[in-house]
Length: 183
Image (tube, rainbow, N blue to C red; front, side, top):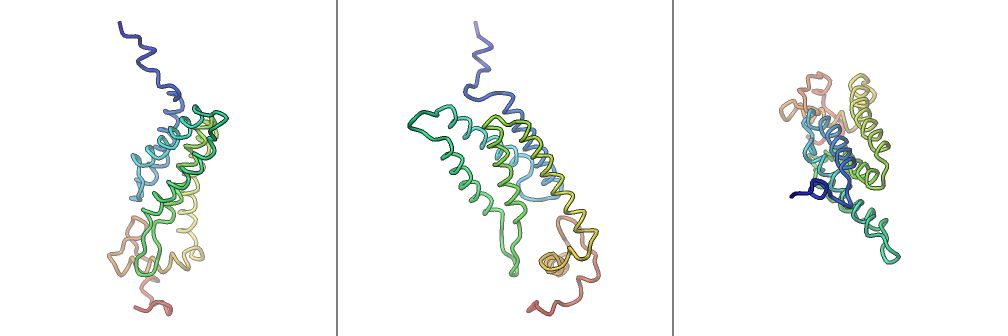
């Protein structure tokens, strides 16, 4: 006879934490995917879940000879490389920095879950989505916040098909030449 408890036992991991990791990754990944950004739903879930698994596994092997905090440091380093993979340079502009920072935050949320701070992880996930959406709304409503990099990017986007932050850009001010732009 199959023992259901043994079948579903995933020690040292816990189903509640796995479901929390999936939910947190889903919420942030949904925001990214709806905007057409790197690290959508699947990637976000896997980053949070993978980080949780590494941290929970390291916590379960904690002895006098081991130090789980070293695993946290290694996860942060590894996720930094993953984040660097979504950044690129185009016409002298660095793109994908927000996606890289989001990946870093996803790993931080996975660490929170791994150390047993599920509620904090959920709150941080919601806060991250609020920041991603809220700052975008603020930038779109204020011309002062569209200066600098965003202005140069909007000009680049206008020259290269009109896409700006995943949506069509129709700002006529973007057609004015930038005195600092060599093109």
